Image (cartoon, rainbow, N blue to C red; front, top):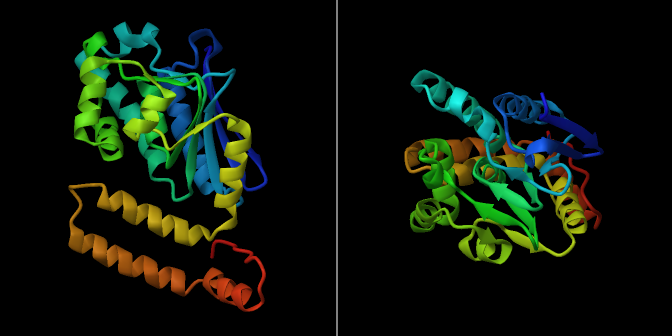
Length: 260
């Protein structure tokens, strides 16, 4: 197997690294399974405060591995199973209560866009390229990925990207709302962002992320979301981190949050 998804941890920063050097980090079925496992591993690691997703060797993800299309995306039942495997991985990433950052170099195509949009922040280098080529491949864009894309850029922009299969440069992707930042120094800017995210209260981030994602989901009942908001508010106010924040304010120092 040429491709793999691995993890590493440095202090409070976890990394998910996507590597398939023969195919510009294109995702195989097994790599989608590994992405789910990697996301679950990062979620379970209490020391990790922020997760960065990036590709190896100067590119992000150049879509799905075309070599598998005739075997995995042609026969009905197999194609359905493939979509389930990919969506399971993306949901594991999207629903992680910790902040996630897609560090995008080079090509971010098809499934790469799905992975990037499943993250909270998308920071791209100035030469990054974005495309969803589903219409040129004669396939439909998966529903879960489409929902997250529409929530990110709006229905009109999502349809334009998919209908035309046009390639966007980093500046155009920023204008479209597909990414949150274009960086001239990706390593430095990712380090600055992750440091800022790692220093704030984890329970506060988890609560805000859950509610923001709920507001972006039109199928979610607002009354249920209000109940969840009240529960999350009570949890944060009852936390040791809340008391630590008050003490730090009184003592004019930086708080030391523990996520509890």
